[in-house]
Length: 292
Image 1 (cartoon, helix red, strand yellow):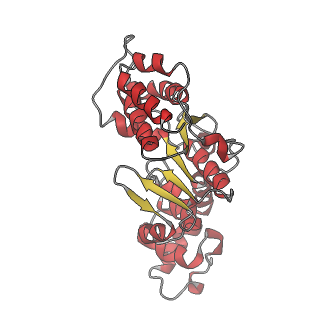
Image 2 (cartoon, rainbow, N blue to C red):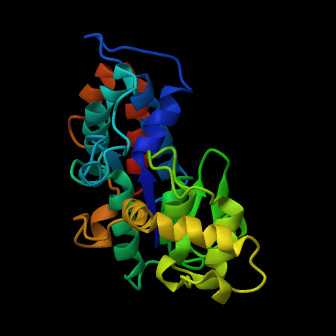
Image 3 (cartoon, rainbow, N blue to C red):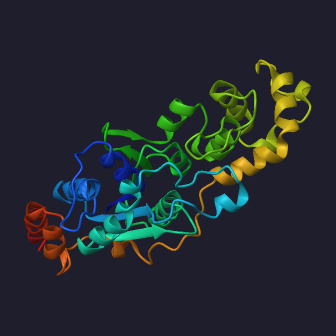
């Protein structure tokens, strides 16, 4: 079986900025939610059977306690933030497994679900539906891959190496020194993507990098400068790697069988009416009937 894991936060943001604004009868903004529901339903119509969606019910997480500069909900349009609870409610009503994250992040839930699904011998491939570079650390050969649904491109382990210059296991170290503006941490001064790839492709993890630059591989240019910068900011580098490392201890599902989509729940028609999207109910009913 194939297991699809969807980054609901990414999908909601993507649709919010791509589809026209719309409101329900109470004035609640619903445009992005409708877009995500239609998008997820299209996956079932194309044959997806086992699927879970992770969302950031609260943008803040335990990482904000570790680093004051970590991303928050500041600056996120309230019309977008208000749609997270509605999206979670709507997906659940459609019969989809949803993981609304509060202490952890959606990325953590996706990572935990990917690891658990990949451990099941019945699963032939795990497809993490997000272009987020953080999730590249979860890629395993061609067994666990990333799918950018907007560009319709798949990134397997070789693809991760081609894009970042390091294998999946080194992605947290890579992000630690390069930084991640989307998550709010700057990385190590003087280190960019090329330097990170050049060093970590040889040493894999920060602890493996010799403290004496003269012991570095002779092919690494600027070793003295890079070493000085890294070890002067060593504590920050380790902290940033912790921020970039996805957690695998998030409760997600007991068995991949829990992710099998069967049909919408009995309240889905009413919810579709609220969303002014009767065609969504008709499509979901048809897709469910085709599986019986």
